[in-house]
Image (cartoon, rainbow over all chains, first blue to last red; front, top):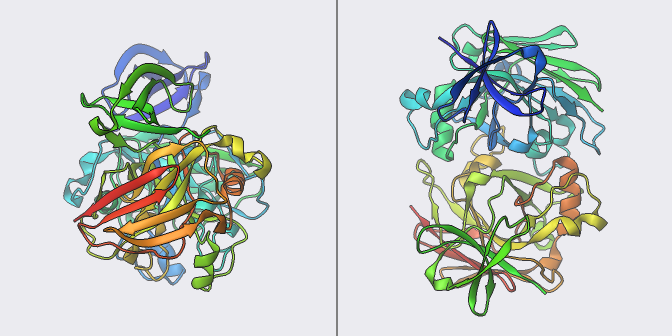
Length: 258
Length: 258
């Protein structure tokens, strides 16, 4: 059975950890990736502010990892996962505000994605063994100041375009299991559906990503792999709200403010 | 007067912090970016293993930031700092071994650089004000699995090529001041000089980098900006030792092992 973990700020302003259930949040103490212990206390979801469900050291973001988008853009299918790195400082949770970078007036784009949350330190693991290093799954809005990518003719500025504070929205929960064969990513912009694509269309699925990326660099508990997006990406105006929903995880919602 | 801070592992295996002096290491306790206090104890430099002088959350690495290399490669002078992000997990200190990624048999390149160590959280600061957010300066060897960058025809793989464990060598110390007008970066490969370039040739000097990058994303104490390299970059064979020296900071030395 899948468990949904969240992190939150209580009414008193203290950070908390808990499992979502029909009665609200069953509070836990300890480390999410250690062996947290139930306190026996239940907190109402409405009484807390949800935080990002983990605090990654690094977020590895995939490019060109869905066949439908790859085909639409006329790209070749990659032979190895193609990725950029977003700093941990770019992460916010559901309900957090996406802030336009102070000196940037250009187009800001949303990308609804699946996020893979690492649970156990791993380096150079095989794909057949990778599942046990995955703690669970979350929703991601991988925000991009897209005009920056090709601003310079000699150098693609992925880290700058995607690395700003608040540009990695994660949440609302981490689901400890997910049926990747049937799950879909549904993204809405101000209530209008813009993306609705199946995770089964992934070129490199989660286990393969963990295997290949962990051969490049060690992954740590709480690190997130954002699996890349598919068709329907678009720009968001200041004031717009984007919601990314994956059934079993919940709905991540964030507003862009100028 | 400049102070040289180092982090080290004592003979007993405990991590330590100290100031280098003629009598050895004057030990401090507390946080480097807080207000560390002298313990009164002095430790011999020979008795300890030097660690990376800080543990960055992110390393921001510059591309095309020296006029001599820009001219040599026939690139246009950039209008904004061009950078990639290396994860904190890629950092090692002086004496640490650079490890060839397990599945990579290609060329590995050294780049001797100046590193700027952030001392105070900063976002969107002006260049005239940026100095006070800089804690000090260190030497960097920005290691690259260079064949990966253009392995895919559609996507430049900077983060993968530069983000592996052990690919960001920092140290040996952080010097709290440095004369940027006269200082030079000297890089040797197995004792043969390969780079010897002046920091005065930087397109975006440290204060400008802190100003511009902090407008893109918040910088935190211990974060490092690797200022980019100049002419003389080359490849290193398994077993080779690279030394990066900047007078006033010391000599960073690391061996590549296969």
